[in-house]
Image (cartoon, rainbow, N blue to C red):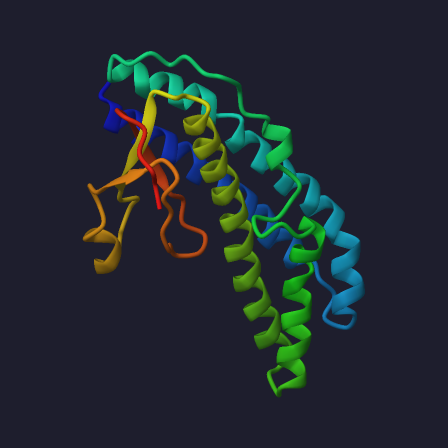
Length: 207
């Protein structure tokens, strides 16, 4: 298996976990009582929090194994100065806030929508779309950060090549195949996983 194939398999596994988490989130959102949206979502929230935290930990826990495998395919030593703590990347939102606070946002947006004139059904549907994007993004971000931490822990890795995941827009397509320094970042669409294809070489300055 080539390094690119390893990267694709890694991204596919992450996407599957995100889809499972988003599916369960949607099922729970469907249990929200239209007559008591905020209160009923607060009652359901602990179950989603446990699920999403588990999904984040699962994707983060794949990072070291992925780096070991993708470097082996390039015949590069996978020696690491440390290992990723998956638990440290789970249970927290990617913007640093409490994950439970973030997961409550769909209820707020639903109530704002109703106040703005949307029907309860329309507002709930909009909240569900927001929840789906939120959950998938948090799973993807946990995996992305774990991969970056695993790269930093390996001095022989100096950067990565961006690869496309599934259908991609024209802006993403023109960035595919470019090499980035290990500390370089870029804008991306919400909920989409970033596929990193680590490369060895002399340590660069990044951005």
